[in-house]
Amino acid sequence: MSHPTPGNDPVVTSYAQAPARTVNASGVSYAYRELGPKGGIPVVFFVHLAATLDNWDPHIVDAVARTRHVITFDQRGVGASTGKVPATLEEAADHAYEFITALGYDKIDVFSFSMGGMIAQDLVVKHPDLVRRLVLTGTGPRGGKDMDKVVGVTYWDILRATLTRSDPKEFLFFNRDAAGKAAGKAFVARLGERTVDRDKDISLTALRTQLKAIQKFGRSAPSDLSTVTQPTLIANGDHDRMVPTVLSEDLHRRIKGSQLVIYPNSGHGGIFQFHEKFAPVVAEFLAA
Image 1: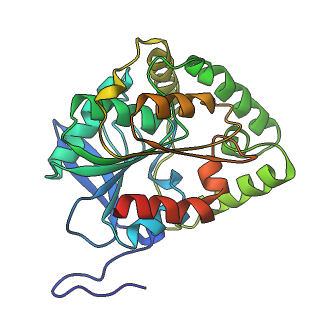
Image 2 (image 1 turned 90 degrees about the horizontal axis):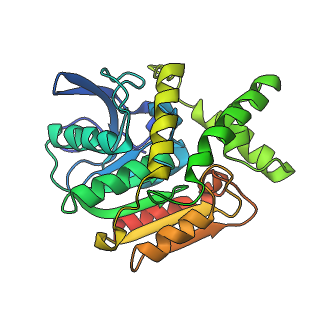
Image 3 (image 1 turned 60 degrees about the vertical axis):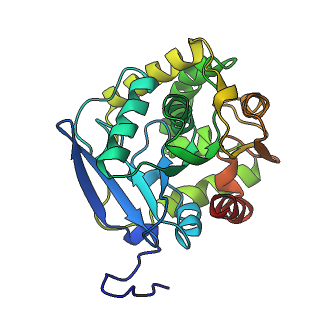
């Protein structure tokens, strides 16, 4: 339920109703949505490979937005943002910094998933004072073992999904057992909750560029994550085929004092399969 704030519009707490906005920086128009009570430090959401503003699970976004100002955005060249998809994730982190500072923020909390978590790590390493609290889900460190295999898995699952007329995320994010299949269908249904003003799908060229950037990230020298002193929450499923679960454990070892949550019998989208358990955990972590 929305409570009107004095002199302002009522607070939007449902991602399905979040207004679409744009901000310009360096000749690029960044598309974003915002919701939740304004004021204080916003939580900026960093999205996954091939994803647009419409790829966030509203059950997680809404849980955070009950008490926090949430901002989701399209990277350059994706969805409603103009410009060109960068060739490296380090550049993507520079663009994220550009977007955040264009909105006038010098302190944020980060919620990230998959490729978004890789970009978020590069951002924190380069701009340690910008980030207060960090959430890394379904992701792994720069130079992590088998990270570069994401490309093969992705193309294979896109093919499998095409043959079965399914959404590729059902294969990429969820196990192919009864529980995983049901969770995948429910997740895809939740992504359709917003019916107006939806984002444009990513182009195939943009997807290929992102995949190559992930491959480069996987084959690069590791970042020094011992410099990450922010409170950090790491989460994944126990059977992640895209960004192997061992990489979440690796991140946990590298980031001192981080918390690690691994959900049973679930894959890359473990946080979406277990959204009822995860949403309150992440909301509490970000509220601290």
